[in-house]
Image (cartoon, rainbow, N blue to C red; front, top):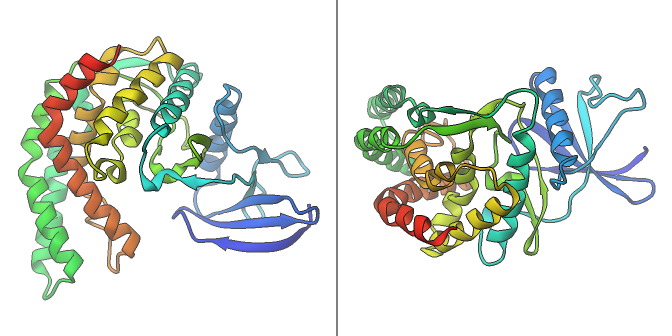
Length: 315
């Protein structure tokens, strides 16, 4: 392939990304790696594995030697996917479309040879004691500084509020049944879900095949902060997502679906990201920090009602 045009894409943190146009006018997506290549290679292999299960994923173009990554760069080259990320939030028909793809993805990954689905206590979702230490260190760091930026002042207040709620987060997880752990995408946040209209164009940026809680990954996209802060429509939408998910993955345990909001709430309450990010925090990340904090509080306040609603409305 001969590139005639290169355009830097300012998105993502682990790679340097470019849009490439070849001599025929076809577009490609190039990823320049800065991390461990063995880890990146197995993540690409997981992407291909999901694609064989009819999950929409971009195709990777191998080198002339047949490799997934050209280690001289190091770089991988992908089919370019037209569309937009789900960072604007899920609305309307997108709920069912995302639920269908997510169910298909998890069903396919449940068969991955790296791990057999198993049950684990929900308290393993988040180490609440470690979270308490992390928040204590973060709050102490803020208080030790001679001055704080407006964002840092807010982040310190948010950290104190979340620190005070950690006991409730721990109680939420303790009250849940054992939940399914299996191979998952690993980073299924809204920036890694490409949409085209009301359809899912592609699932991108897989992580290596490491087992994780199904309920957490469902919450990661179904209770994405940018969706939750749009208003109560996320509650009805989540029920639609769950029904579509179960149509694709009928073997899923109901506990994993009905526990998703509780898991998402507890996990987010116990996370210091991105409150602990070093200054200067980009405006987009600051907006996400505020949305994530607000969404965690909303989920906590509505948790009982939402779980009961899902129990009644999902079949």
